[in-house]
Amino acid sequence: MNKDSFNRSKVFTVVIHILLLFLYTDITPAQCDTLLYPITDPYKATIFGTPPELIHIFKHPVETTECTIAIENRRIPDIFWYNEDFFYTTAMQDEEAPLVFIIAGTGSEHDSVKMKFLTQLFYEAGFHVVALSSPTHINFLVSISKYAAPGYVPNDVKDLYRVMKWIKAELEQDHKIKSFNVTGYSLGAMHSAFISKLDEERKDFCFRRVLLINPPVSLYNSALRFDSWLSPENLGTKTPRQVIDELIKAFSELYVHSNIVDLDDNFLYALSRHNKFAEMDLKAIIAASFRLTSANMIFCSDVCLNAGYVVPVDKHLSTGDNLMPYIKVAAAIKFADYIDEYLLPYLQFIKPGTTKGDVVKNCSLNSIVDYLSETDKIMVLGNEDDIILNQHDVDFIRKTFGSRAVLFPRGGHCGNLMFKPFASKAQEMLKR
Image (spheres, rainbow, N blue to C red):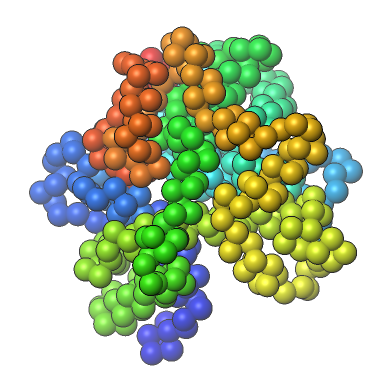
């Protein structure tokens, strides 16, 4: 690439792509021998992840299989024609083995970077593995969701449970399955807890172990935290666009004025050490990533339901339409506004009398606290400095799960998911 002609829009795309993937940085060799995750700033940990030298390495990675489910006669909007089939990943052992379902975090796909890692991790631990996209991902929403309005955990969990039953029936035809387990990270962890509760009533899986990795305690409160990071209280006189523009500028300057050719780990390490990144900027970067994921979800839901929230009801988008105006509208919507203006009216249409208080409560682990306290099959693996938790949330986890909760001192939100000690602990807890 010619650095002088470095295209600004391409830089923006690359930066956001990097943020969404939450890739990695580098560290000094002296730190490699310690068992302590080296990045002390939880916001940087969340963005840049695990240093390459400290990532759990798989000696014999398995070749995975991408599988599909198609629902006959399902209405698929023209612009989402490529999501007609539902995709998921399997990694099956040759012999009889326990099976674990892995549920992705907000907006993530079954084969995202974190999901590929977790698939290999639990296969290495001796499990059959099924990796599922989040109900907030476009493919899940378009191809298979019954509700198509993500963000209300009880409905998202019913969607997941139905899909898991179909996959179970399919896999049992060709494989010997000793037991069923479920895990997930971030929002996928919250889904796992509610799926376990649902299964206590329906008894389709009778899960042996349930592992919650970096779960939120309250989806609503965590989302409001991201909203606040894009507010004047955090940004001061800056706008979210200015923060992102400054990141793009730093990215461009570093690229142009360095000898780095590839956008690899070394480049990201250099970017992570950029002196101009204040805590405010890091918060804004994380919140912007969440906002873009949320915007994609809102746009897809609106088109699928023809709700008229972002796209007029009489506008039928085709593959030739410019979608950017609608994406801009969706990107300006706070998660709190999505709840008030879109999700709550939708839920009230399905079940009259539903209140906002019901929505907030039912998307919190506190709503099933008695179950979580009593069952010994559910465990938590997370970090004390997780940026989606406050001290009250950390206290809730410790009190509710007791010795079944393992919290590392550092790692931010999923920043140390690939860190060797963290990954080994995940294997150990699920096998226990």
